[in-house]
Amino acid sequence: MACRSVISSSLHMTNSIAIKGVLSFAPNPPLLHRVPKAVTFVSFCSSTKPLTKSFQVRSVASTTEAASGFDEMVSGTKRKYYMLGGKGGVGKTSCAASLAVKFANNGHPTLVVSTDPAHSLSDSFAQDLTGGALVPVEGPDYPLFALEINPEKSREEFRNAAQKNGGTGVKDFMDGMGLGMIADQLGELKLGELLDSPPPGLDEAIAISKVMQFLESPEYSMFSRIVFDTAPTGHTLRLLSLPDFLDASIGKILKLRQKIASATSAIKSVFGKEETQQNASDKLEKLRERMIKVRDLFRDTDSTEFVIVTIPTVMAVSESSRLSASLKKENVPVKRLIVNQILPPSTSDCKFCAMKRKDQMRALDIIQNDPGLSSLLMIQAPLVDVEIRGVPALRFLGDIIWK
Image (cartoon, rainbow, N blue to C red; front, top):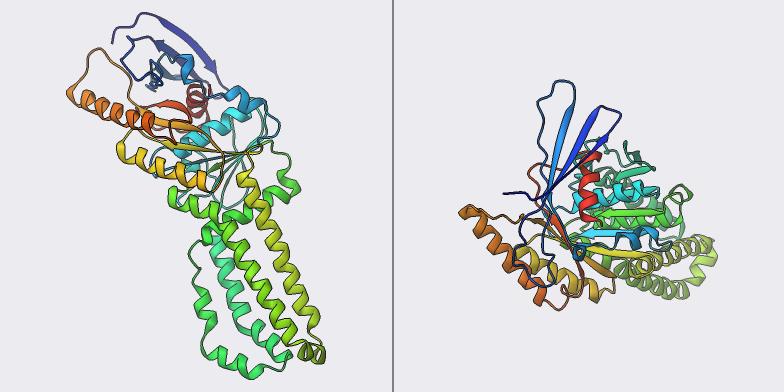
C-alpha cells in the first residue's frame, strides 16, 4: 500500500523497549455515511537489533467521527462503573483491559474485574492475576489493580457451608423447636448432598457479592473507575437480572416467614427461639436491601455504563442486537458499541481480503439499519496481526480505540 505521509514517534520504557509508531495514510474507501472514512490497523513487528526490541505500529488514520468520547468518560466525576460485554471471542477482554490502562494513565486509580469464569485478564496483561485477590498491574502511570473472581474457590466455600447448614445446623435448630423427628426425616433425604452441587447461576451470584463489596467496602473506595470484563452474553444477562430475581425470591421467603411466625408464635415462646427466627429475617432483609442497591447501580445512568463489544459478522451483530434489546428491557444504560477486528482499507487486495471486507460491510450495514444499535455511538477497533499482550500493547490499543 503506497503511503503519502509518515509520522514516527518513540516511547522509551524502563526495560529498554523502544516502541515506534508509523501512521500511513491510504485512499478513503466507500464506507457508510456513519462509518468513519478510514479504520485503524495495528501491526507489531519485532526488530532484529541485538540490544533493544522494537515494535512498529502501523495505522490508517481515523477521522474524528470515530471518536469514542473518552474525554467525557475520563473527566466525569459520577460515572465510575463500566461494563463491557458481548458474544464470546469478540475481544471484550482486550477492550476492557485497554480502557483500564487508559483510565489509569489519565489520572484515575482503576480496578479491572473479570466476572468471566474462563478468565483471560492474566493473558491480556501478561501477568499472573489469579487467586481471587487484588493484584497490582505493573506499568501504568497511576494505580491499576486487577481482580479475577475465582469461581472454584467460591464453589468450595459454598459446598462447605451447605454441608454444615444442611446437616447439624438445621437439625440443631429444629431440635430446639421440638421438631427433631421431622429433622431426622429430612436427614434421610440427604439434603446436604443435594446442596453439595452448586446451583446454576452461582458464578453470577458470586460476581454480585463482589459488586456489593465494591459499593460497601472501604478498600475499594480508592478506585475512581471500575471496569468489568463480563462473561459472554447469556451469563451477563443472568448477572444483570439476578438482583431482581433474588429480590423477588427473598421477598417471598420473608412473607412466608411472617406467616409461619404468626402460626407458631406459641411454640417459639415456649422454646425461646424467637430471637433466632428474627435474626434470620433481619439477615434476609439486609440481603434484600443490598440486592436492591446492586440492581439500582446497574440501572443508574449517572454512575454506570454498559459498552457492547462485537465484530463485523452477521452472527455477532445479530447477537449484539438481541443483547441491546435485553439491556434496554432491563433499563441498563448503553451508549457505545465497539466494532472490533475491522480490516484495514487497501488499494491492492487479495481475493480473500476482498470477500472478507465485503462480509464486514454487510455486517456494518445491518448495524446502520438496526433500531437499537444504530442509536449507539459506534467505535471502530482495528484488526491486529498479533495478540495484544502486556501494558505497552494495551496502551497503544487504548490510544486507538478510546479517543
